[in-house]
Amino acid sequence: MAANATGRKKIALIGAGQIGGTLAMLCGTRKLGDVVLYDVVEGMPQGKALDLSHLAPVFGLDFKITGTNNIADIAGADVCVVTSGLPRKPGMSRDDLVKTNAEIVRNVAKGIKEHAPGALVIVITNPLDAMVYLMQKETGFPTNRVIGMAGVLDTARYQAFLAEELNVSVSSVSAFVLGGHGDDMVPVRSYTTCNGIPVGNLIKADRLDAIEKRVRGAGGEVVALLKTGSAFYSPAASAIQMVEAYLLDQRRVLAAAVMLNGEYGLKGVYLGVPIVMGKGGVEKVVEIELNADENKALHESADRVKQLLAIL
Ligand code: APR
Image 1 (cartoon, protein in one colour):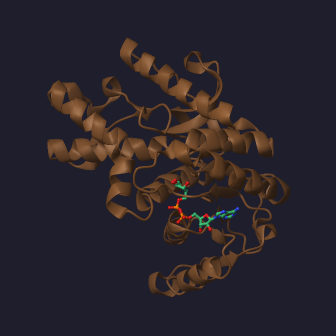
Image 2 (tube, rainbow, N blue to C red):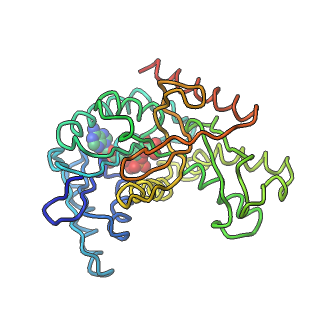
């Protein structure tokens, strides 16, 4: 991985909106490297970068942050996190964004291919599974270096609701949400535990059904409350977990949207599954045995993603 002039890692944030700005702050405070904040809106990335550079002395952080409207400034980035594109408005599904955001993703893919050909690319733009597929096709990067952020966030939402229900620490809940990042995502109850105790032993089935329904609609619940955009703190934090896993070679097991090549009986489609993430990006797709209902739900979710790909 290339180092930049300071010797620190270089993280390019493509899109400096709500998620991009939060990502920039988290990159700095977690000491992950220098940040380039890129957006098409003039002045905005520069303003956010200047503001964030004044946060550095408060926390004693040495990181360089640059705001720019010139994509060439991402040159040599180790990681690109892509959030460019429109967020949802109340009443919209993530899929409603497909055409507009596809144009934007095609455009930024060209810039990443030209200026940061060695980068790991993490896509957050919705509809996620279709946009990360498009990013991989347009850049032509190997599939282990183009990953979609959704599983970490969907899993975190499941963990948060379960911890609240059980009145225990969020860190005692281990969960997995697989499938597409849409209303048909698949919370995998059979692998979800409270420190090893299956949640089904602790929470009644009808209550778990209600919690899982809320997980599937959690993004929409935030949109309905905000009215002017979609969730941004938790998506940014989730992507940061992936950036850390890569830059620090953690070999962390997490759920992410990756290109499947026969795993789970699916091929040529990006979908959320458990992976090992380390310095090689997607080091491995972890295949777990699903029960019949979970397997059916995963395949139905894949069918929905394929329908979106057909539109592209
Ligand atoms: N190149 C770079 N940036 C762009 C481009 C482009 N071609 N087109 C739009 N943008 C920028 C916008 O100017 C805006 O600043 O992308 C930014 C998106 O920021 P927000 O509108 O604040 O949206 P955000 O909440 O950050 O979500 C971004 O992630 O979770 C998904 O659904 C969400 O698709 C949305 C994306």
